[in-house]
Amino acid sequence: MTHKSLEICYDFPFFLQEELDEIFQAHEKKSFQKGDFILEEGKMANEYYILDTGLARSFVNDFNGNEVTTHFFVENEVIIEVLSMFQRIPTQENIVCITDCECWKLDYDTFQELFHKIPNLREWGRAWMSKELFDYKQRSVEMFTLSATRRYLNLLGQKSKVIQFAPLKQIASYLGVTDTSLSRIRKELVSHPKKI
View: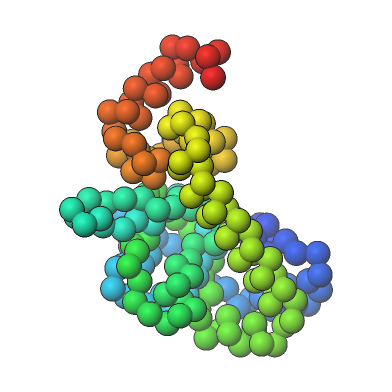
């Protein structure tokens, strides 16, 4: 495992090299197998991860006990449950590995120490949180303003690994459609690709 995913994740113009070196050294390698839980509902998030290789997802159980996928995590992204980690409350979400995953882990206490020591890490954190908030808002709006086909194509364009490796049921719940509807959308795209 190289530092490539850390370099991509912490790509921020104001970091000094010595600051990055210190941040990188604070992370430790962690491997998960397909099906392993990174975080389980009811537990506290005490770390975050940067995904080096693999695919993971977060999900909640709805009022009928069905799993609803809330997010997919692909390489070079931060795997985190922000509310639990920073509000110090048990999570309502589960985060599980869809494939084997290699990650870089940073625990809460170490992050807090670095956060107060390195002002540029605070600025990076603000920038990261702003982008996440923007993406979350965009996704919320698109659930109502875009067709299911367009939402599927957006996912394909942004995170093609999800389409490759995630089960149909998980993708369908993320897009807010039934498995049957998603199967139909995929068939239509294969048989009539120019219509889109």
